[in-house]
Length: 246
Length: 170
View 1: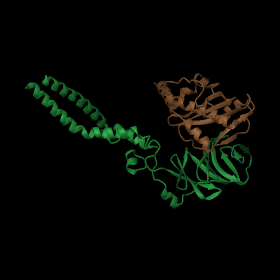
View 2: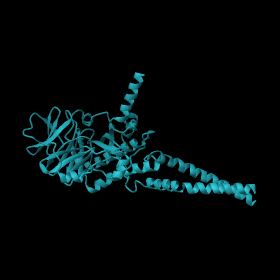
View 3: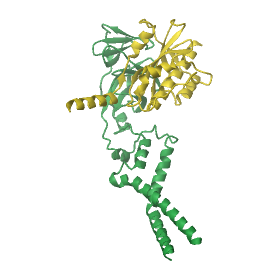
View 4: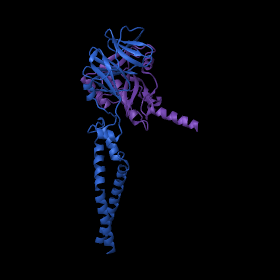
């Protein structure tokens, strides 16, 4: 009888813990499953855009800088953090300080302090070029249909295929890209806040209990302890049952 | 104590900033004994892009790749290529002559871990390697503990350089 009561107590505790931890285990299992398949969903490449998620990470409004595109008065190059846009279309470029943009023939050229990014008119990336010039790039423009780069100390002129850059003493009259205000229609279309965090990172943090303070932090621990307890109590119940049946 | 603090600061800064070991321009000059030819470009058509995607295991973003070709060692081509190790680009300079790698050098490393791939004991393994028909390197490359992703990125770039070399020779 004592043995039977003991087993009954284990069953009661087992059931209580199971009931209590059901939601925790479901939460951990579902987030774990989603995390396991995050790459299949493309979450490792998609940036977080939802306001409430950005709030969770404390993402603040992005600083915005817009440059005119020399040779194309209808386009505007904008930088939001490390993301670059033409009008309101995000470019496949991830770089630091945008210093200007120009349009030569069918190519769009955007410059950072140490790189040039060439894009087609359809904004497909042609090439990102590391520039080894004398000084950092401070401006980009056009003079007589030729691409001109301005560095700290010198002027450089590009060849027709934008492969060679030759130092020139005086590039002539240069139409340099300059900082301007982004027209309202494009400004409204751009996101207010941007982050480099992907949905996969959000899933990792959600699964690992790193988002919502102490209550969230203890969820993985409680889940683990509950699962351990259920395993042990389940085995004990089975063992006691087999002993009773002997 | 101050010395310890400075050392810790130096260690931290070495982990958190891009390390440029050699400017790509200098690497190219070295490969052509100080007189590099004019750069050329290979435009990537759909077929070549598919081959690159097969080697890189992701889509290559870009429509053209620069290279330098000269008469040294038969007909050699020099490539400066980038590939992400874990999160940031690793820049590697590769010289290919007679369909095999003559030189491979890590020019810039921007990741926080895995910088060991810059060492000669690792990069020398690539010398004389060629690309087999199944798009694999002709020999085994010993990995580096703790630098798995960087090793993988450098191996991919070696294959890309060999593939592009064979394309420009056709």
